[in-house]
Length: 196
Image (cartoon, rainbow, N blue to C red; front, side, top):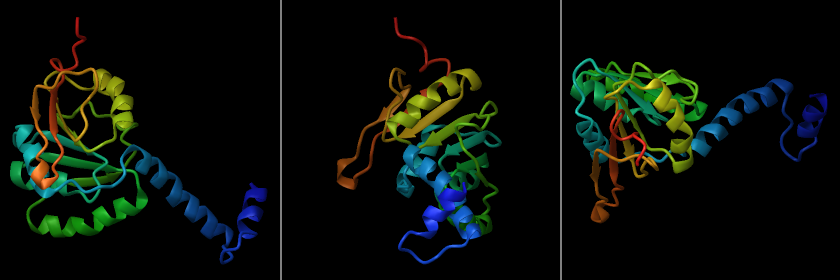
């Protein structure tokens, strides 16, 4: 480890203390992991509302947003549907931004939570609805977890990318004029059945 700090110290950048190096590593590693799964590209507010409507959320249902970014999805779920909404974000910088915006949404009635968590490791068994805007490789990595943890009837709404091998219970096509991506709705117990 000492060699690493010596290497960093010899780079043509301003000299960093060991504390600053450790702090940079603590911030950069989870941010890199998070951005590989879901680079932060905000979902348009119109599409967020459509995703939530598509899920047919009932008051008190548990809604998770995987890679919640600025948190708008869970705040809308809380405000519009009275859902127990939880956003999971693993990038420290984006998480900090979401926490900065949280008081604004709270003034509008949101009671959503934003957690600094790796959604690959978070138990999602209490979910009624899962929403996300993730890249296809991240979705494929999550499929076994969903099959293992999620109860029958849990709704999954994906923005832009489908869950390969699963049959959507609903699909809303791309709206080219507004540059909106398609929406995909899946239901555990129906969509995830193996095709014969």
